[in-house]
Amino acid sequence: MSGFAAFLAKERNEIFRTWRIWVIPGMLLFFGITSPLVALVAPKLIGSLAGSQPGVVIQLPDPTGLDGYAQFLKNLSQIVIIAVIIAGAGVVSSERSSGTAILVLTKPLSRAAFVGAKLISFLGLILVPTVVAAIVCVAVSRLVLPPEPVGGFVRAVAIWLAFAALLVSAMTFFSVVLPSRGAAAGAGLALLFVMLLVTIWPPAARYSFAALPGSVDAALTGRELHLGWPLFTAGLAFGGFVLAAIARFRRQEI
Amino acid sequence: MSAPPPIQIEEVSKRFGTHLALDRVSLTVPAGSVFGFLGPNGAGKTTTLRILTGLAAPTSGTARVLGHDVRTLRPADRAKLGFLPDVPGFYDWMTGAEFLRFAGRLFGLGGAELESRAGALLEMAGLARVRGRIGGYSRGMKQRLGVAQALINAPDLLFLDEPTSALDPIGRREVLEMIVSLRGRTTVFFSTHILADVERVSDHVAILDRGRVAASASVAELKRRTGVERLALTLDVAADRFVGALDGAAWITALEADSNRLRVTVNDRATAAREIPRLVAAAGIGLVALEPEEVTLEEVFVDLVGREVG
Image 1 (spheres, rainbow over the protein chains, first blue to last red):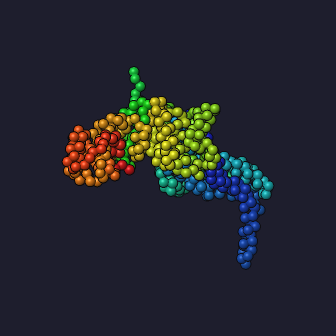
Image 2 (tube, chains in turn orange, brown; image 1 turned 135 degrees about the vertical axis):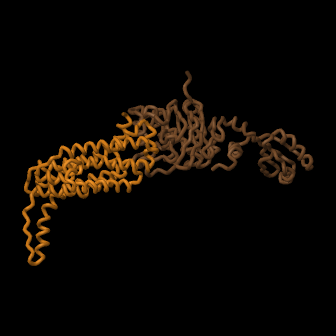
Image 3 (tube, rainbow over the protein chains, first blue to last red; image 1 turned 30 degrees about the vertical axis):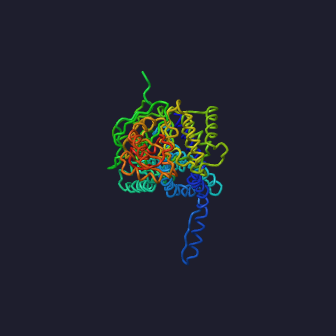
C-alpha cells in the first residue's frame, strides 16, 4: 500500500503545482461567483435590449436565488462537463506518453493502484471544487438575490456529481484504452451524446444512468424524481468502467 | 539450495506484428556481476529490458528476475529492482530532491533513512546544489537523476538502459565508476551500444544482434573464443613499404600502418608469428620488434556480428 499512498500524494501535489488547479476548480469557482450575478443582470439586459426594439415589450419577473442556482447548474451541465471530458482524456495516457509511467510502474506500485490513484485524484479534482463552488454560489446568491430554500439546489448538485463521477470513471477507462488524448476525448463526447440521445426512449430515461443529466433541473424545481434505478445503474457502470480500466491496464505493455 | 541467478532468460521471443524483435534469446546473468548487454541500435536491447522489468510480456519463452517470473512480478518483487530507462521521464514540476523522495516513498522508505539516501544520491549525481525544477534540467542532468532514482532502494538487481548515452565525458566516467563500485553487492545489467563502456566496467558480456544472442561470456573468454588477435610490428623503415608484401595473406583480417609501426589483426596467430618474420626478411627490411597486442571488444564485436556497432 505504500506505493499507492505515495502515488496518491504525488497526484494531490501535482494538482496544486501545475495548471490543473486553474482549469476545472478555477472554472467552477468562477461560475460559483458569477452565476448569481448573471441571474441578477440578465432580466435588465434583456429588458434594455427589448426596449430598443419599437413595439416589443418583455416583462420578466424579478430574479430570485433560484435563478442564480439554475444558472450555476446550466454552467455545470454545458461547460464544466466538457472540461471534465477534455481533462480526463489524458488522465492515464499522459503518464504513458511522457514516460513517467515507466519509472513508477517499475517500482512497488501495482497497475491497479496506479489507476485507482488516478481515479481518486480526478474525482477529488471535480467533487471538492464543485461543492466549494456550490457553497460560494449560495452565498453570493443570498447577497445579491432574494433568498430561496437550498434543498432543491443541493439535490441537483448531488445528482450532477453522480453524473460527473460516472463520466470520470468512463474517461479513466477511455484514457487507458486509447493512447491518443484526442481519441479519448472523442469517445467521452460520444458517450455524452449517446446518453442524451437514449433518453428519447422512455425505459432508458426511467431506468438507466442516462436519466441523470436531465434530472438536475427537475431536482432544482422540486419536481418528483425516481432516481433509484438511474443511480443504481450509474453505480454499476462506474464499477464496470473502473474494473475494465484496471483489467485492460494490467495487460497493456508500457 | 543455492539462490537462483539474478536474471535467467530461456528461449524468449518477442514479436511485434510481423517483426520478430527477439528470437529465442537465452541468457544467464551471474550474481554480483556487471553484465554488459551490447548491440547495435535496434538489436532488441530495450525490448529485452522492458520484458525483464515487467513492462512488456514475452511472446514465448520464460524470463526470471531474482527467481520471479516476469509475467507475474508483484510490487514486492519489484522492491529489490532498480531501473533506469533509456529516456527517463520525470514530473517536470518536481525538483530533483522531490523526485528522489517520491521514488523512495514508492519503495516504502521514509524519515531519516530516506533523507539520508536521497541526499547521498543527489551528491553522487552532482545535483545536490541544484534548486530548480526538473523541467529546466539538461538531458545529462536528467540522466544522472535517473541513475540516482534507480539506486534509491539499494537494489539487488539494477537495470540500466544506455546509462551513459546522454552524458558528457566527465558524467560518463562518473556513472561508469558508480557501476564499478556496485560490483559484488548489486548485480548490474546494463545495455549500451558504446563498446568502450562495456570493456571498461563489465566482467560479463552478451552481444545481441538482430534479436539474437551472438555471444555471451566473460569479456576475457569472449576475446579468447573469437580467435581474433593482433600483432604489432616495428620496422626500420616506413611501414607502408612492407604492406604490399602482406597482400593475399588469408590469416590477416585488418592492417593499420602508422610511421614505422604496423598493427596486424589476425585470425591465426601461429601462422602469423611464423610468416611475418619470414616476409619481413624476404622484403629486405629490418624487424625491430614483434609484439602481441590485446584486441578490443570492438574487434570482437565486428568479428562476431560482421559490421560496425552504433
